[in-house]
Picture 1 (tube, rainbow, N blue to C red):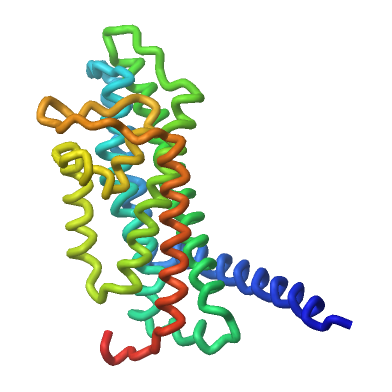
Picture 2 (cartoon, rainbow, N blue to C red):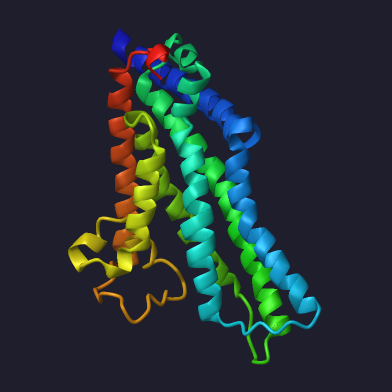
Length: 276
């Protein structure tokens, strides 16, 4: 009897159990631990602002709403501020938080492949990010759209279901793209704050960069997915946008490469809390 054929399913079953156990533990940490507070605050910020806009419209304040103003609200507040920094808090802490809490060695003491550990933590970060910022996107945009419709002197039609799905897809891919970068920062950089701020600066000036450099940013690919085009202003350097059919597989490929690099990093990592 070929014993290798019998061992292989057992190995896969073990990896699956370890993956889902890690996923369950890390989702709880990412959403309901003390380290999740900054991510919650980031997700609640657009909701609070949209609630303020809605409250003002109830008292007769005029808000000239349009599809363009809503997409600018989404792109610059929900995506580039709340989702970016909230994703940073989640994914940097997946491993950096364990090092600071002196708890990463508990995972290393278990008979778990480092690749399974990396996949479980990354998947937990995605679930937490999609939950927080998916809800933040949906609630803040719906409330803002209602406020715009109530307080606008023009006939603003509101936010359609297909348009909302487009915004949610952009948020999902934003969490995937930025989460990949921040996972690597948490593994390879001892102090990720300055690199994270530098990345935000790079993403913020994307519209000023030449076409070749635009492609070296996550936001370039997200712009091709936003349902309403983003107006970069009169000083933007014009370039051909990357098709959504290439942007989505490209971001998925980046995530796969990140998982490979994270697994290699973990295989060679030794715990030395005294140096942290």
